[in-house]
Image 1 (cartoon, rainbow, N blue to C red):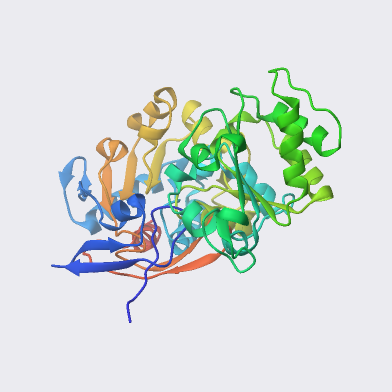
Image 2 (cartoon, rainbow, N blue to C red; image 1 turned 90 degrees about the vertical axis):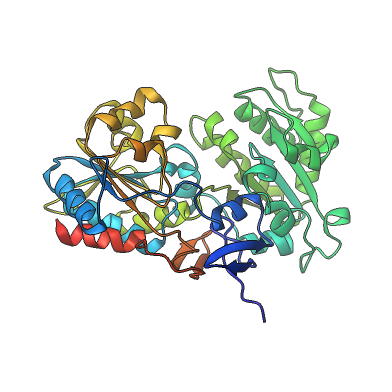
Length: 416
């Protein structure tokens, strides 16, 4: 019998992956999407272990990293989305010990939705619920055809679920709301694509709430009221609906109140849940682990003496770098120099910087200490949390000389 593995290419954590190994390397990957294949085949440019640009051994790099964090008054620890839950918990412990700022990418993406779900302010479901029950799926500001290539085929639109045996042909309706005609919008079809102007999400939501209340909807951008009423009728008839929330929607809203209003109204007339379209394979895990420890999902600053966590926007990676309130940084499995605006991230190059990552990137090129780690779900196992909050076990596929990031973090913590 074939052995199946979990793909850590995104937060779907598909668990039906088969691999062929040749000369201690993965030669072929079966069932994974293009992102998963790239992830499982590893780095094209592996990171080397260095201190001050010179190659060194792992123990020396860990000793130097511990020295930097020990001497810093306000270190920053950032990343975590591509780490196992075990590593994340050790990172939280390290942040407590060093009085660090602690944050992850949810600070500027899916964080508000995940926080509302954990606080039980928004109704959610599992991916398996979607596959087996969902008859109406809305992709709002999301393009899973590119961001999560197996989402439509494995969970949301095309599969034949227990209660959706006739699949997409008769049993499912897919709807796309976006500012552009994405590949997902093309799949949904012209009649099910609702193109709105940039920043028009709140207004469209309120118009839809009016339509769900049997009122004639209005929008300042002149959207056809008849089409909104038709959409409302489709949503009212849903037996199990879900809104897949993408970054396009989150970035458009100043806060989640319009989304709360829409979901509350939908659940008065039908049954709808929300699914955050999380990108990195274990970002949801970090949010849950930190929430269980502190009551917050991100943007915290620890007191090294009491272990107390303070929370606020001033403790986010963006604000802490913009205000230059941190004096050293440990970056784990992330590349903020590439993803954050230069006006914010350039400060990283001016402070002692440590990078733990399997691959070389722009941030590692500026780091005083670089420590290569094993690939999660490929070169070490552990646990992770899918975008829907379901915990998944990861299995090791290949051996490597690199330590898992959890082991590196444990050694740094012990050395401080």
